[in-house]
Image (cartoon, rainbow, N blue to C red; front, top):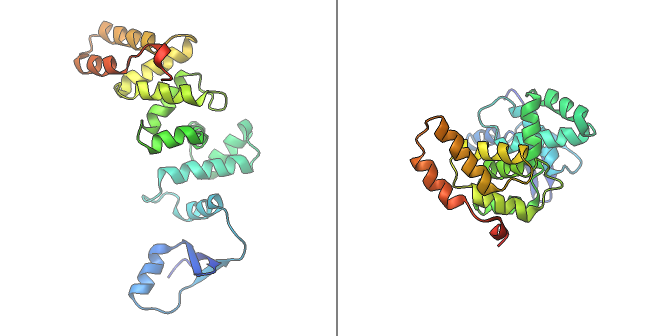
Amino acid sequence: LIHPIVTKKTEEGYEVITGQRRTNVHEKLKLEEIKAYVVERDLSEAEKKVISFAENAGQKDMKHKDYVDVVKYFYDMYGGGKQGLEDAAETVSIPIRLAKEFLKQARIPPKVKAAIDAEDFSQDTALKALQALGDDEESTDQDMWIATAKNMKELPSGMKREVAVLMKNNPGMTLEEATKMAIGLSESLGVDLNMAMKAAAGAIQDDTNMLT
């Protein structure tokens, strides 16, 4: 065993924070002891993920959500703001642009997260809808956010990007107007829109019905 595992003592025994696979191998070999660091104090879920991240960074089994949680943890730890984002990106060794995207995902409010978990739409669609509504997760009305994401979900990914950019750059533009404009731009470039038109037709709704 090269690296000791990290554990936290619990009422039931020990919780393995990092090194679960090494622990499983020891159990299969029926070894009674394993080298371990024992954390004395209680750890938050975010702290556990940071410890796990420190050990697993760069490995293939690192999950996307782990990066999101770790970036948010370091961003808060460094005091937030532009400098906090830069310091978090440097600590995790990722580009600032990517750290900003992870932070945005970490800030998705509970109501929108619940809709994502219920598979009403994907996280990517939720973020495109947020962009369309101004790209400010703190001030965006969650019901409008959810309604916009539901109406965008059937659009092809490329058209989602176009619609989001059009709506963000033209405050007051409706989803219907942005979708029609995106289709028009694609047609002017000679793109075959048979599939896109069919998907867009199901997504376009009158704004008066957006929250129903």
